[in-house]
Length: 564
Image (tube, rainbow, N blue to C red; front, side, top):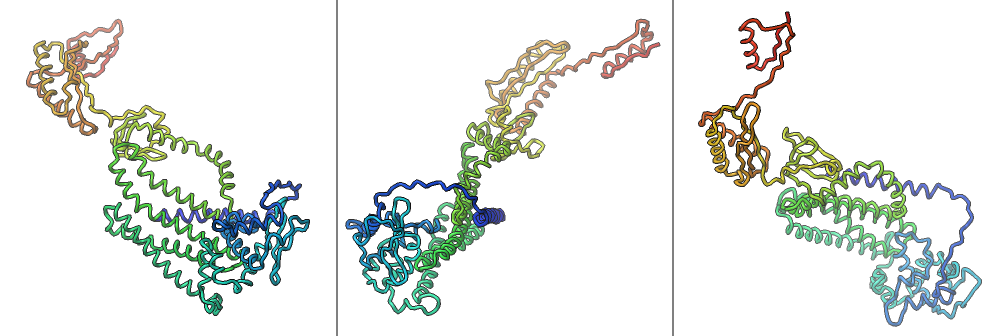
């Protein structure tokens, strides 16, 4: 949980810094005067004249064979002043209300000219407000001032619309308008700040929020109970309890956003509120997703424990880490986009700096690709005993950056993955058996019959051992040495660990030593050559000197007689 808190703090700090930086840039940087570049605007046949635009808008909003197409109708509105976050939603709302106003005023395409040199062109007016068509390039649209004034104009005529007309306008896209048509006029009066029905709706929204939250928690518990074997442990109960708050925040902010859409708030204030409500909801979704990761990776961890291949063994533990990174990146991008930061432009800018970062992080990138190579090639797996670059150990962990080995000295060594794939790796753990080879040196005076008996006895010892491969046994008198006779003993033991290898070798070698004793044989003692340098006029003169030299030879001590 500490890592979760630190990660969220870091992301929030990063987003605030980026947002403030971009906001400061937008507010303080004064563009230098440049020659305006003429914008090429394509001619839209449906918006080519005031009459064509009005005809297109009315026919799209009230088609004879289908429901209103609000997305197409919004094309006739100049919504360039609307913030991108609420542009689509507000454009649909303005289209519905504008259609109601034009219908109420009985405006038809014939009431506007087919062409005009006046821009903006007044279509109709209500009290102090006017509905204007404005030319942008070759096309005509309802002006930005009209888009801004439509909610105020609609309030002027709303009381003149019948409930049937309100419900028809609401349809399936403006539910709030349909709901409003069912509200008694007495509840539309304002007692305290808001209309009375708004307070009732707020109370209903709060109750519905708790019910939805409770339902979602029960649903998640039901799903988790099917994947977790220890669902009744205290730790799991705490984790399940920790998801209640983020679920409540998500449901509440969603209901609040829907609730606020029924108000004709000023676009600036509405955008500000929706921006921060959306930000809170996105952060709550991130927190919920992060807290759900341990709940649903229980199954993944179980699969990793039962994995039969190194691919599964490495991939399954990486699922949780990958989920963390994905959630944080998507959440950060969504929050930045909500606050008006051009995420695609930011990503492009980061791409340029990414090249320099990649060069600076060359070793890290090499290690990541090394981990991928290990994953694909599978030269070893966790638990294997490997040897490389003079180092031997048991693989304990394979990560994105390094692989950790436990050495025979019980120390933990981390090896960069890039170095591993560039080295010769001897996977001792992949051996089906371990080859043991040694040479027994017997004295030159050893009778041939004793050598034959020794070879037969050693073969019998090896064949009787349960871990010795029968087809690998090689016991032969195979060499004459300068001071001994060599008997080759070679066999394979079917085992995996180094410690087990040492124990079995000890058993076999002790049995061979006992066999030597029973046969009355002893291993030859290596004779060391001693170079004695004497001067031409120096000769040993007494037998004691000769005996001393022989004694020193037997003891293996180098000795030089002193010169006279």
